[in-house]
Image 1 (tube, rainbow over the protein chains, first blue to last red):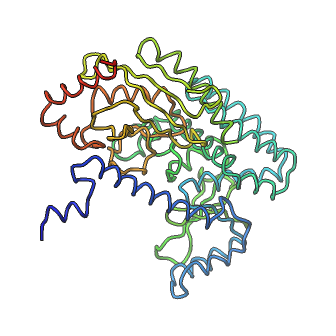
Image 2 (image 1 turned 90 degrees about the vertical axis):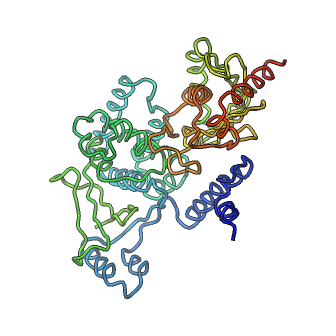
Image 3 (image 1 turned 135 degrees about the vertical axis):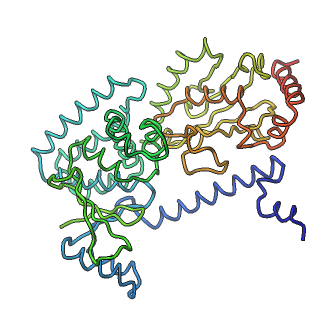
Length: 268
Length: 168
């Protein structure tokens, strides 16, 4: 047994040759790409509206914790719309659900459109370099689609068009980041790891595929003034799901289901 | 529509780059062919007071069609010897990677790719990489080792590359 050879075999990256190192890095990246591709072919960005009972089949029958919690969830909600688990699911689920709700509420839509315009003007003034205008444009395209009283199918098609969908995600990420930074005096107390709010935004909010936590949800709900209810379903005791409304005490417009690492859309 | 947005952003990146980088920083960058905004050439001057000072190093930036959702790739087309440049010329610094996309184990505080970054930021990061190699994440292990253990030899090697880059 040669420990040096063994290490070389297991960790080619430490094997003192730039060429090996490159091959190793590339293998890892290719592997990650393959996994992403697989996830993409198996899951649309946003799915059709499905009976909530589809969830029962996702867990083993003798998985009593989840089976019981789904039963409880079923008392409160009838349908679910799934999103692709690509790290952007919170923004995509929120974006779709919010615009879908606006389809049925033209007064709210007008109010919202004006607010969104003002916000973007404000943001553009604040920081010319980071003005998210091209992303905002895509967002306004979607708002116009909603304005024309498009069908839910049209909206769903738009959300499954990768470029439209991803630019909306970027736009919502930038709004979240902008709000966190503007209210940094408040949010700095909730950020772990000794980072500033700005660093947190650069690392955890602005890059694509970074997952979202409470702090992101609070910020986006407040930035857009849209109330979000999240049902939390995990392995915890109790037999029922817990929900949280952002901001607390508001009247929810968007309902999301959270399972560890992932958000889907819920319907009453 | 990915491509159109990418185009318009690259056009504004180009204006910004020309405005801020050319005179003070000694960087020239732009599309090789006006018809194709997704392939740029850059000329980077070795920063003053470093072992790469005086050199002019050409590189290619290749932008993906979904830029700026994904970062571009950058590759020096001249011979380079540097801890953060692969032997085939590819640049390996944190800003060219999204968080999580992490073969080199960059520090979590290092600046990463996100759609608000720009070509200007990348080029400035490359200049500071030339000035201060990061020997923690070695893309060229031989160069990392020499940088750490035999700085004199590293300087000699860099000076040779500087002369080569100027055509001597």
